[in-house]
Amino acid sequence: MKKAILISFLLCVCNPLFSQVYYKELLKKTEEVLAKIDDTKPNGWTKVGSLIFLANQVSYTNWMAGGQGSVSGNIGLNYDLNYKNDTWNWDNKLIAGYGLNKLKGQELQKSDDRIQLSSLLGKKASGEWFYSAFFNFKSQFDSGFESGVKTSHFLSPVYVQFGPGMLWKKSNNLKINIAPLSSKLIAVDSKFTATGPSFGVEQGKSRRYEFGTAVNSYYKFVLMENVNIENILNLYSNYLDRPKNVDIDYTLNVAMKVNKYLSTNLAFQTIYDDNAFAGFQTRQVLGLGVNYDL
Image (cartoon, rainbow, N blue to C red; front, side, top):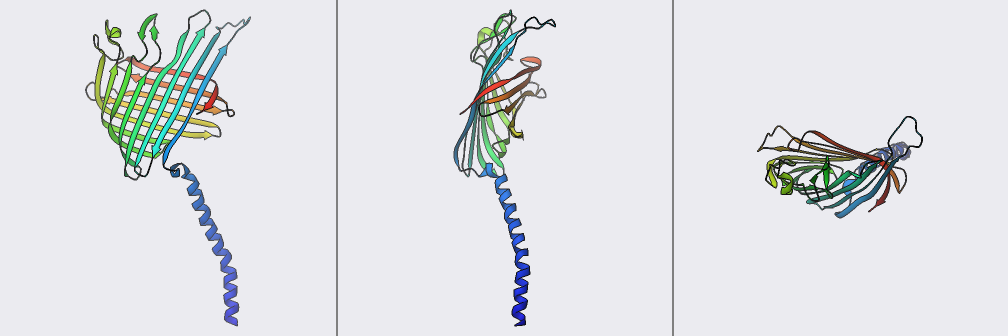
């Protein structure tokens, strides 16, 4: 009888303690599963993208401090189409943008013009590492002018990069690809090199070939509620010509969502390529956007 009472007493005391430990472990495992939800999506195709229209206007009426009125508009597409299974990953991204700016008393000018397509194929190696192959394409839609002289047009110049490498991929929002044996081709219309070099292509030629190391990284995160930040960094070192002069192409996209259809968007891009220009090229677009999710 005493033994039965003792056993009952121990069960009453120990059972709540056991339950607390059990539920704490269960809660911990649940939190871990939620944290990895991006990596546990079903195999197969996933797609996400948005179409954005940005508008900006500056107007003055009897403004004694002075100023110059302007109107600008930009349309942009950012689209991802990805595939994965237990062994393979295939990430594809398309970025396209075109914009015009009109200053009072001046002609229309481009404020944005780009076509960028990137494709990255990976086969599982170990852990978060993949054997990879990448392809990047970059060009423009419309003609460009400098001091009234036409310097480029549709698909001139064209930049193409490709090669094998190794991919480290934590998730769709964090990855780095290193390709030490990559090729790069720059092509322009020969009429733009008739009197001198153009976009790194020598005078009288229509293309330039480079061979070197390409490093491409992507990082997207949520800074705070309704504020998404996307970072795209591409580096390239040409073994055949001044390998220490690394080409840099960095893009920052910030989307601050107001509601389902409206957002404030910032796009910043800087390029360093001393074959095309001895210094940093920069582009910045800021405005209120109308969004359409694809």
